[in-house]
Image 1 (cartoon, rainbow, N blue to C red):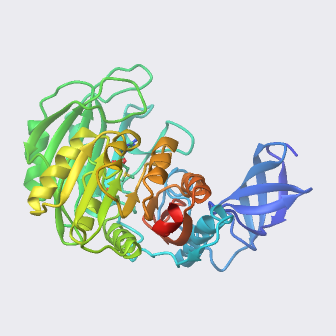
Image 2: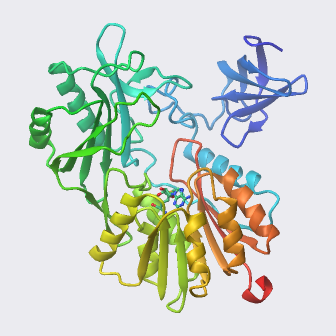
Length: 448
Ligand SMILES: C[S@@+](CC[C@H](N)C(=O)[O-])C[C@H]1O[C@@H](n2cnc3c(N)ncnc32)[C@H](O)[C@@H]1O
């Protein structure tokens, strides 16, 4: 088998990321965009000893579960990889991804929490700008595996008004011929736009540039048509790196933060705060995590990796005391403000790395339950060791990367915990990413 070889095949199944799977001469081939049971003509795109990748050249017998993607950029954009299938199939693929990754454990598997709005759900959009070969201004998302921008008018999974604001900004930059950054020469001014919105209909715009610039004309122009924009910031990032936002922010207009409502509590959200990108399913995810924890007013709880305190303060409503730990200083500043905003007195926020800061809680008091919501790389081993040492009876693990969660759960199971219950949640519809909430527990007697 070689790259560019063509084969007519029948797809046996889906893999955990929604690729079609077939076998050619005993070799497994992952076919992007192919559906289970379809007969397709494929071309090999990447060949390895034990497996290969291929793309579909022609669909010979089409699956009934195939749909026409609602997005005109689906073939080229690296964003949504499951647009070509019915939503029911997407949910089954996500449930299977969690099941396969956790297959060595024995637990109760709950059905996926579905998303009622599979389009327009994203409350954060980050869009780079470039000049194309003709010198025209383009903005959009990066082509799969490249740094070439696919020009687009709107992103269908992002909030509609954010798409409109983006369009206005692009028109302004184009009319006023603002210098656009060129990553090849590291010259130019304007790099990227971030827009955030909340369920309370407040919007924040962050303009990313290489240096200070007077955007008062743009601000007037935006304010006239978008009264919902409550906060505009400049982020200055002169470095030629993949990290879009630096920590140098200058406020250009309005409030420091925008306000979100999560399960009846108010949260001030800053440009740098972590906030789940799908508000409605974030509420369902948190509710599921809270249900699993069976909290009561005698309990002391830790919320590790707490961000701006959105889970912490919802825990606080039900328990005696909750400690939130988070490494980003600005997030802890926001968390403390959010605590005041909601008149909550039984939450304490600690700034620092969980693996270091959790130690100061070891001897303080008995902790009855711990929530973890780490980034994609999962938890540090030192953090898990301390959790084990603290004999915390119950763990609620929220994960955006089931592979690293499985690694951490294995460590916890080897140390006396048991994975009891797992619920996948669709926070990222039309993409193959899945969020999961897992309950691990053990009787205090057994942990001794
Ligand atoms: C997936 S977010 C979860 C935030 C929050 N629980 C929420 O739902 O909004 C992960 C958070 O962990 C923080 N973080 C990353 N590594 C950390 C570490 N070693 N110690 C503490 N916090 C960390 C990040 O800054 C981020 O806010």
